[in-house]
Image 1 (tube, rainbow, N blue to C red):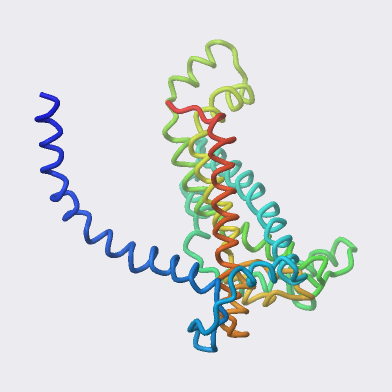
Image 2 (image 1 turned 180 degrees about the vertical axis):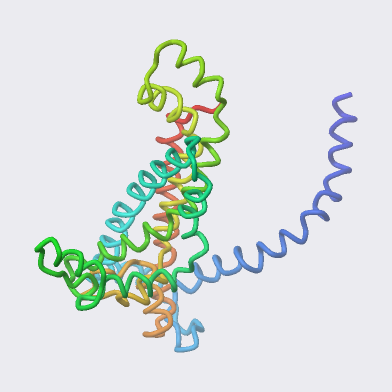
Length: 297
C-alpha cells in the first residue's frame, strides 16, 4: 500500500510542475534572475552601462565597510526602522480598537483611517513637504501659535530623519489599520461576554483577550513593517534626496545613487546584497523570538 501511494505521488508530480510552470517562470524572470545577477555584479567593477568589466572579488564589500557614507546610511536605516515601525503599529492598533467599537459613525472613521492606503509615496511626500514648509507650512504655523519657534523640518539634519519618519508613519497607517481591524473582528464575542460575566474590566479584557488573540496579526504587521521601512525610497527622494549632510541617506537611497547617478553598479549591487542579508536576518530573528509569543487559535 505504501509503495502504491508513493507511485501515485510520483505520477502526479509532472502534472503539478505544469500547473506551477507559469508562476515559476514569473518568479525566475522577476525574482531569481535579478537576485543572482545582483550577486554576480557585486564582485565586479562595472562600466557606465552596468556591464561587468573587471573581477575584484570582495573588494566592493570591504570598501563599503570602510566608507563613512555607507556606515552612516547603515545607521540611518536602523534608526528609521526604529522611528517608524513601533509608532505605526501602536497608532494603527489604537485606531483599529476605536473603529471596532460599536459606535455611531464608526463606518466613516473606518474609511478615514484606511484612506492613506490609497495615497502613493510621491503624493504623500508632496503633501508633507508642504506641511513641513518652514514659512507657509501648517506645522510651523501651529508651533508659532503656541509660542514655539519654527523648525527646518527637511533642511535641518537634526529633524530631517524625523520628518521622513512622520511621513512614512502616516503612509503606512492605512494598511496596518485594515489588517489589525480584520484581526480584531475575527475575535469571538463569546470570549468578551464570558470575561464580562467574570468581572473583567475593559483593560483586563484588552490585555488578556485582545492582545493574545491578535498576536498572529501583530506578528505579521511587524514583519511587513520592518521590511517596508528598510525598502523606503520615494518619500526620501522627493523630500530630502538623502540630505541634509546625509542624514536621511538610507541604504536603499544609497543604492539608487551609486547605481543610477554615479554609475557604479557593482558597488551598488554589493550594497543591495548587504541589505538583503540585513532584512533576512531581521526577519529570522523576529520569527525566532516573536513567534514564541504568538497564540494561534
